[in-house]
Length: 310
Image (cartoon, rainbow, N blue to C red; front, side, top):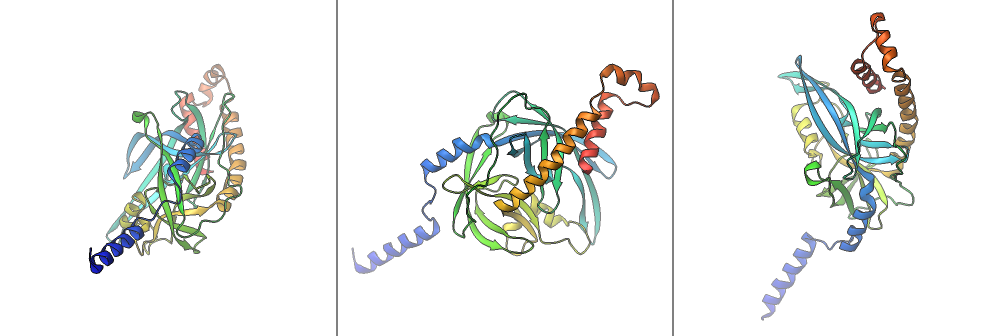
C-alpha cells in the first residue's frame, strides 16, 4: 500500500470514530441498568376525554411513568394529564380541552391494576403526578437522585422504557448523549440520541439518575397560544431542531427532587379528599338520591375534576 493510500485509510478511520464515538456505557452496564431500573418504570392507563369545538370524544390511553415515591406516587409527562390549549395563529385558532379520568397503574407485566387519582401538575416543568390509592401491601422501589453529578457535555446516558400490552410490557433501553447546556429559562441540558421519552429519567454509566426528560417552552407565541408548528414539535420532540421555541430537555436531578417533595404533599391531600368523597356506603348514597345525591359514576367524575384543578 502506498503512502497516500495509508493516509486515506487513516483519515477514514478517524472520521468513522468521530461519527460513531465508542460507548462510555458498555453492554454489561446497560444490561445491569435495565435489570435494576426497569421496576421503576410503570404503565399508567386512563380514559381521555377531548372536547373539540363542542364535540366530545373519549379514548383509552396508556403512558409511561416512573415511581417517584414508595407510597405509590407516579411521575409522568403532564401532557397526558389534560388541560386547555389554543392551536392556531393569525389565520384563526381552535381550543382543545382534554380531561383524563379512571387512572390505573401497572407494574411491569403484572395483571393487577392499581387505581390512582390525579395528584399534582407542574405547568412550568410540564410534569404531573398520580397517586395510587392502595398498594395492597406491595413493596416498590422509587427513583432516587443520591450522589449523581451534573451531566457533562458529551456524556452518554441510558433511558429505560417499556413496550405496550401487546409486547407484554417488556422493558428495553435506549441511549442518548448530552449535547449542550441551557441556562434560561432554567438550567437544563440538550440531548441527542434515541432516548426521548418525556417524564422518564436518564441514568449515567453507574446507574445513578441524573435527571428527567421534559418538554420545555421558551415562551408563548405572539397570539398568546400555541401555534400548530410548535404543537407538532412537542409531539415529535422537535425542540431539538435549531432555533426551536420548545422541545425535550433533561432537567437536573435537584430540580426534580424538589418537585417530587412538593408533589408528595399535594398527593396526600388529594388522596385524603378522594377517601372522604368516596367514603359513604352505596346504600347511603341510594337513600340520599332524592336529596340531590349523585350516583357512583357522577361522584367519580366530580372527584377527578376537583383534583385536576388542584
